[in-house]
Length: 580
Image (cartoon, rainbow, N blue to C red):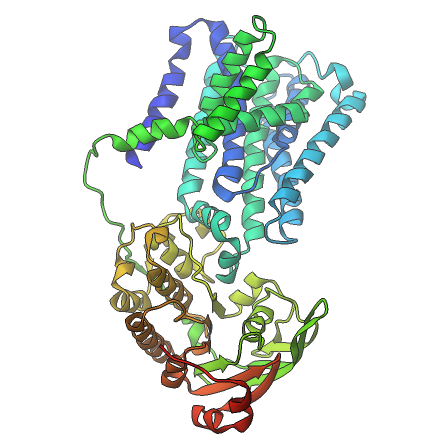
């Protein structure tokens, strides 16, 4: 990581020296490509980090260019007006992007394709408006006569202003990517639903990322206006948007400097070939295809690969967790009520007037044959499915139909049936996300202190599962059993009053099942929480359960102590369980 940062810094320093090595026209050309590279960096934040692709960044680039171009024409040298115009060129695209992003992402998980098409449609609309609004934009001929930025020369000193803006944007994006916000964006791309079960509003996270990318594009557009002296509708159009996406992919969408490198290489190549080779666009397209297929991480990934092979300049310092936080969410009572809950999907009735109440701490097990509606009960409780009829109340509040993250923040934590972690993040980062659940404020997302958070329960968990202490190991490299344990540990580390554990011992060996049983028993006793377990292994049910509910065909068949359930003839008629 340190070597990669050093390479980034050296690259930026090298860009500063360009005017001293080549002539002013080369620096002028390079300045334009650096502006496009800045827009690509914003795309990289959305596409490479958060996993959604904006296809209309030129819209925000053009808005910034038109706004600041108009400011330069009317400012008459006034510094206050120029600063206000620059802020407007940055903030107007950011606010617009935030609103669009929130409206799109709040609808559903996996809205990436729809989002991309919407941004494409918006930039096409922007192009049409720029063409038709002659009184504001100059129409087809564009906004002309834009003066130079005061105190600069277009072919000389303006390059240094652009370089400084690139350094500023690179530094800010690097910090954002390192902060908890950046880690949560990465987790969103890998497993958005799981992050929502930790109480994070992923729609808001992605909307903020989109707004940041639009602000960067707006800043680049603002500097584009004095650099070119004219802003035409092409600055808002889809063609430019598509080109920047291509440059970002060639350079490396997941890296900070990759989009800048892609813009420089493709930009200079296109300018050299345009007048000498008739099919230069075909050649550029072939280069794009070859790079994407051969180097999915972009050309900058080759540079970073060489940097990682370089000898380390010092021992890596272990991250210290020295800020204790109190997560008192387990102190509250639990009163969960299902009242005639129905779930009908098409012709299938999954839950049929399901009614039960859980209001005592300890371990409650839900058993029943496959298809009885056990996991579906968890799904309607946690917002994955909306109940067709009936009511679900938790501590007096209705939860039926609420979003996942809102239900999680009420104090309900869920472990999914299949181990659900963030495989590309380290074990330590997975643990961080669990510790942040319900407690990380919006302002804390952009500070580094939350990486030092710890709780006494984390120490207990590391004692039960020693691999949790190997914080730098990738979660994706863990065995299936360890991922199951990590998922369980993360659920418990939220310290929610109600823990929903869907088959926590599935796919575990006999010895691992024993470890998991001991862990559940210890953690529930230690925290005083209420755990509801779905389990087919009768060994787990018999050892842990204070109370058992039996479901059959979506309805409650029986409930009571294990001895009562075992003796119930109705249960014996429909259900038989096994053990490992």
